[in-house]
Length: 51
Image 1: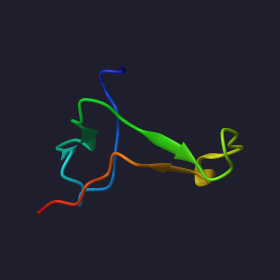
Image 2: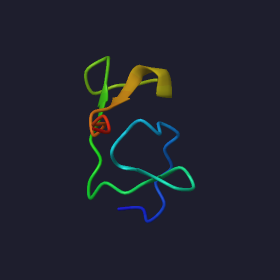
Image 3: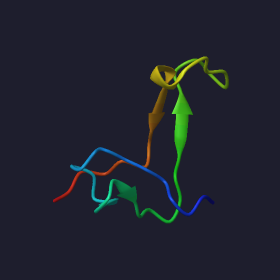
Image 4: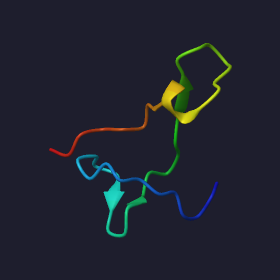
């Protein structure tokens, strides 16, 4: 996995200083089955809100 995964969603429990993601794994899904044309057609399912 990439060492530096960037994330700007600071309301996620995996968000770290410098807009880094500190999750041990990342799960991304497409809105169109297995094919996506651009980033707007995908979502990060790893997101969990900070408590």
